[in-house]
Length: 287
Image (cartoon, rainbow, N blue to C red; front, side, top):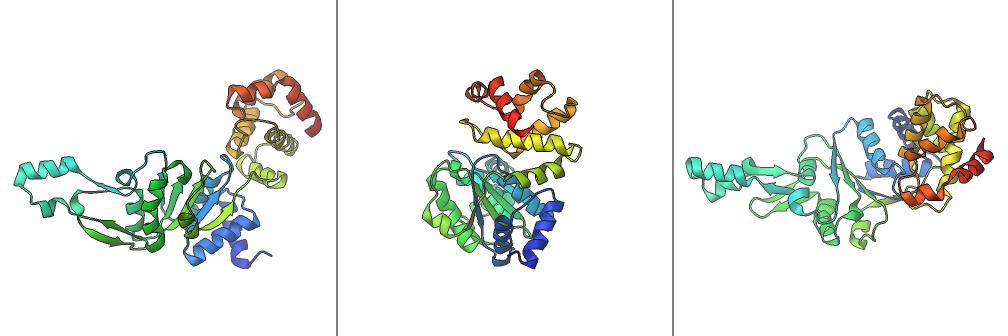
């Protein structure tokens, strides 16, 4: 059953270009109403990052993004000191140690930036599973109490509580401590009707018959043994490429069509796994 606030959020997200199903819209609604972080897990290319962008647009909030990677540490995620400016201050006026470690010389990275905003932003912690396990410990204080402790200054509480969205692609298992602090939903590849709705919103110039063919081919390719299954972004790129080439029917020019698969297949192995005869078989079923 879809609640009224949930339905309103779905309509607002659709207006921002994101088509959300009932499960996702409920998860977002609860994250907003309860003030809890939301962990979105699922394969790459299903639009998890776009969810946070659309949510920021709907809420008219600033989007602050922390892109995670192996080796990410507090200096790049939370804060660091502007050592060059500190050195200049020492040379210029012999600044004391106490004045050197003050807000004047503090460089705010995404996590500190997010909790020191006057208006609550959307904080996107993207691909948290790419960061080291040690980095998760840095997040626990923020996700539990929404405060950051800087040894030289003390504890900085959040001015306003950001709406936190974390994404993960399943690269590694996340800690139980992190999961306990978050609401959770799994974002999978969209079903046919949802993907058609996405294409209709993002590519309104695509005729209905071609749109059905595009979605049918992409969904069929995802069922093949591919290393990198095409995501929503790849589907939209392919649709734009076909429209730009004036292709209105996938049965018309197989040679040109095969060439456009550079939009969908991103490894040599996947190109080999989808030769012309495979494409012919797929198109024969969806045309």
